Image (cartoon, rainbow, N blue to C red; front, side, top):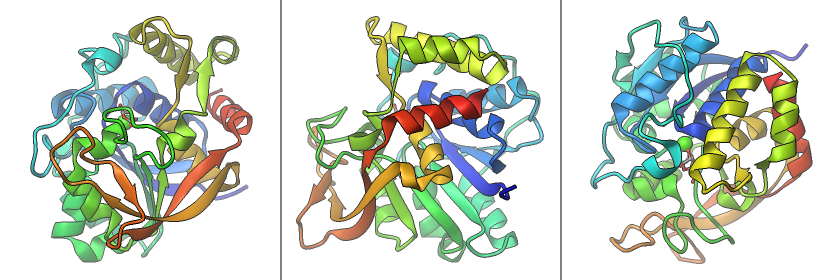
Length: 303
Ligand code: BDR
Ligand code: CA
């Protein structure tokens, strides 16, 4: 039996964040050290509460929730209420949190990274990179102890979902993205190029619901809400779960190295990844995915 990988999940739940977290809690392959929360899809109070609600659902109030940044480093945030709903989880019924959240995500991450063996904890980043940038800025030695940093964010050869080239997580806090991507960590980007290929459709959803169990049933409810908030479209991309899938089974993804830098201007493409510039940093990016294999692994872990 393979040992569970220790992970910190940095997140802004968010419908697809919630599916990713439920997968991580139910698949038995992760030891979740904590959930750190960030403002993104919705404000920090709601993302923090949602993290606690998901843990309560799964009977895992022992996993700490640590609230982080309430706003990007230097700009106003962008919210995605139209997709994720005013409660961030599309109105899906979940129990109230059973434990109070801690405060200070970056300092908390620094503490657990320093206490654990170097490179023994991966950080799975599902939201804007504000907390991780704070970790890099304020606790650089601790940041250097991260194992793998796997980030859902950006678009390489694919149009954006905020501006023509910009993706939500990086567009929310471009300065944070710039700091994190230049930090020299063992970083892999999981951009829209692959997350748009891993799609929940009606048949997959029906099979998931039929498989039974709390995580699968709640994920089916969350994805139904995602269909409803997308004008009834019944094929939606599972962005954040791809981070968990890459963490478990990298061979599902084809990885290439690209020199990228982050657009730091004020226009619609703030946060876009620029390639071919002199100041670019070489990063590993996922450019292709075995989508059928990814959906199979996701469904198996949720059962
Ligand atoms: C990313 O943006 C958010 O809305 C999703 O939760 C995901 O992390 C996709 O661009
Ligand atoms: Ca997210």
